[in-house]
Image: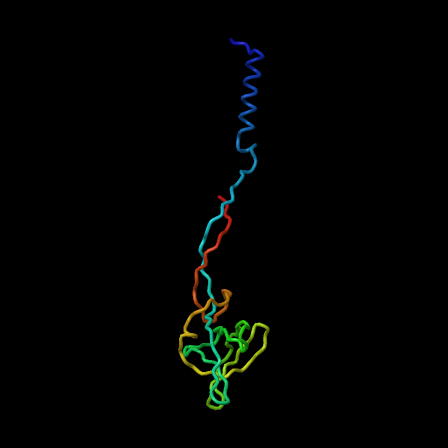
Length: 154
């Protein structure tokens, strides 16, 4: 029978202690690495078109696309030269005394009635990026993909 010497006891005890400390149970939670990735996600945007004013005799009207619908956004050209466009949302289209009128809502909540002429031209034929719609909103929209960077655990 072998006898256990002090060196062998210390060596086996230190190996046992090293094995316990190296195990995953004693190591604690693993450090996860955060990585930046480019991901694409689909969003819904309102249909937005740029419209201009037209004066015919005493009557002033907006020139809008023929396919205009409730829920569209219109970028109304400003009346002054260097002023930005005013974005309005079409709330209702109605006919008043043989002329067409749009009921629009501005971003600050004002409701306006504007005379319109329907005509497709180069200015109002281009799609502009509209505002993002919520998932529950049923307004006419265009699907778009946006690419963004997000941090992901690896």
